[in-house]
Length: 130
Image (cartoon, rainbow, N blue to C red; front, side, top):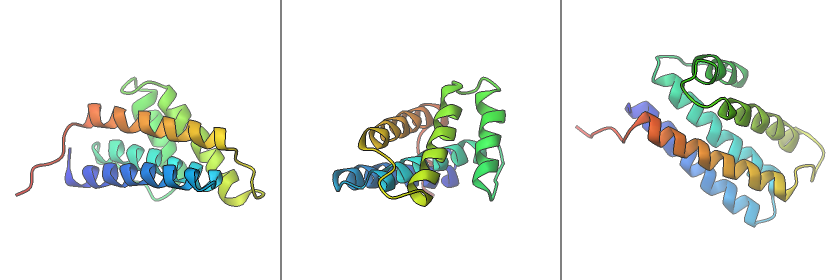
């Protein structure tokens, strides 16, 4: 794992922690948003390992699907998790207040944790410090 990948994984880990705090504070929309960002950072880490970087969320989601999920490098469900989390994040951040339920947020957090586990298994350990 490169230093850049490691930083993205750490951002994902922090986002999961923040999502749990937000859910505990009864902010399910914001919790779902942080869970999405955890998955997004992990997708970026996978892409970074292949020398790919994108400025748009839609491009990251698409490239992750094409180069990892549909290429058989990761289970297809992870691309679906990312797409659904993105849609829910849009609703939570820009939709009507209290649209995202606690159950939906819990599901996204659980998926983000699965995504993190996948990344830790596939991308390897932290880079060695010089």
